[in-house]
Length: 124
Image (cartoon, rainbow, N blue to C red; front, side, top):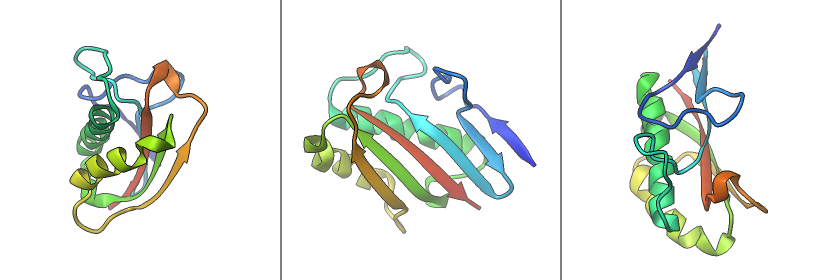
C-alpha cells in the first residue's frame, strides 16, 4: 500500500509528481529544489541552496514520521561540480550519525536555475 506525503513546510511540487511516497516502511522523497515554501524564492549561493534543499527534505520526512537518521540513500544533483566541497560541508551538518549512501552528479541544468537538487530514500 502506498500513500502520498505532502508537507506545507516544503514547496509544492512544480510538476505532476508528489513530494514523497510512502510504500510500506520506505519513504521516497522527490528531488527537492532549494525553494523556500513560505516565499517561493531561492536563496543565492550553493551553501544556502543546499541548506534549503535539506531543510525541505527534513520537513517532508517529519510529515511522514521519519527523521534524517532514517535516510539510507540520497542523490545530489549539482549545476557545477566545483560546488562539491561547499555542498558537502553543509550536507555534513545534516547527516551527523551513520551517513546514507549517496551519489552526486553534475547536470547540464536544473529547474528554475537552481544550483542543487537533492532526493532521498528513508526506511523505518
